Image 1 (cartoon, rainbow, N blue to C red):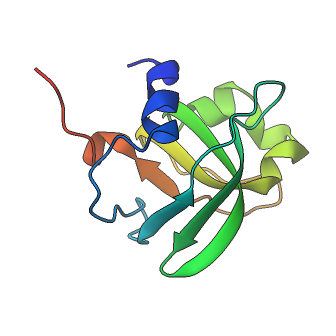
Image 2: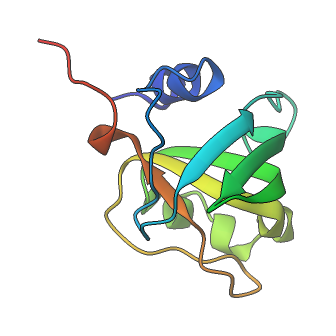
Length: 116
């Protein structure tokens, strides 16, 4: 799995229209998934998302595995405190921001149909 492909899935909302849930069992509805951040991190900014019907606005970070958050050193950067959702293929570890906020995670391997 490549991160660029996950960016495509998120940008174009290429997963079932049924309401997905985070790995923390929070219902997610994407109101505005994109503005791609081509110049710096996080990957997408100004996203609008509802978590259990409460609307949030902020940034979305995309990784193949949750543990990439640490290998990319995001846990040390203040820019990542504005992340409201992580989109990953595989959720292999819990992640929190530098300020201690445990990030909701959408695990795409659980909601995207695999192609043969």
